[in-house]
Amino acid sequence: MNSISRFFHLKENQTSVKTELLAGLTTFVSMSYILFVNPNVLGASGMDKGALFTTTALASAFTCIVMGVLANYPIASAPTLGLNAFFTYTVCLGMHVSWETALAAVLVASILFIILTAFKLREKIIDAIPTDLKYAISAGIGLFIAFIGLQGSGLIQKSASTLVTVGTLKNPLVWITIFGLLVTVMLMIANVPGAMFIGMIAAAIFGIAIGQIKMPTQVISAAPSISPIFGQAVLHIGDINTVQMWIIVLTFLLVTFFDTTGTLIGLVQQAGLMKDGKMPRAGRALSADSSGMAVGAVLGTSPVGAFVESSAGIAVGGRTGLTAVFVGIFFLISMIFSPILSVFTTQVTAPALIIVGVLMAENLAHVHWTKLEIAIPCFLIVIGMPLTYSISDGLAWGVIVYPFTLIAAKRFKEITPMMWILFVIFIIYMLVLNI
Image (cartoon, rainbow, N blue to C red; front, side, top):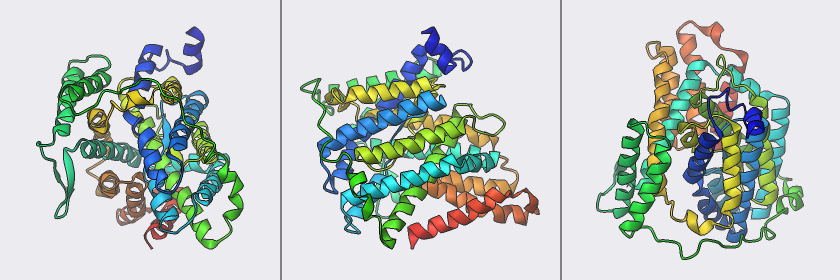
């Protein structure tokens, strides 16, 4: 235990193995849905769903453990939502590209990702983003994951006239989230350790009691083989030989680049690990991130990236890479205990996401709202992330507007060369995705 404590600097970060274990378990439970969602989404492209379940667990475990050991950050990773939908519905079904070739595109994008990381370009971008915008990114992610929680719970639902509206209380699943939310809020206000995780357990028990969550008939099941999809990205890398395929590669690269960069900034900010507005060990974190994407492509899944649900573990005290290592271990264990995971539905995990949104919104207090040239781009980032359902799109809104507001305020000289570069890149990014 002493060697583990020294390696992860637990004492310096005012945490313990017990706290990191609870944080890792909370993060894992909050994001475990990806083990079922990712196979369903990618399976529509023709890929083997059983193999995808195992691959999702392996790719997530690898990236989490590397992040924890290499960068010592409590940040977990897995195949990201949005990009897996782009992979299946846009690339494979829309453009009629085989899933094998689409995996090759992910692999090529990950190689470019690694090159950009090696040249410390991503690290320079993180350091160049103004402090106010970093606080806005963290708060925006908070609103985004709260929105995900509200949506997953059924407390809000889509509407033809107003896009979203309040959900119906006639849906018994909604009451699982309401019960879990009330329990979690009361425990947190009473300063009960592990309040979020206890709240999820309580919600799961409540769901079983009212007959809305089925008890698993078995506890252990064998992990399916990954042989149907393993290594196909490498075998089909020669298929990346047309303009269309290179556009797909660049889209994977751009979206993953800014999604994961924005997520990393927000989570490190939330954990209080920023030093003088900069992210310590940024190069190591980004190396873990990019290598995970490459390994995931070889194993047979869409891009792997940092998960916003890591904020749930951070909220219960996770401060070091030991949290991420524990998440990775839980992903490995999950391959044989998958039936148990079915108890933790989106309604059960929703309260944790909603509460984390409240906690991350605290960063709004640090933004200079009285300075309109700062307030406007920050507001666009904060509101853009949940409304566009994309961290990278919300970030783009703020970064594109930022130079204009500073020029209008006669603060032209404060715009760094890197922010001008980001301004141009985000304009290209928006054009590539929307034209």
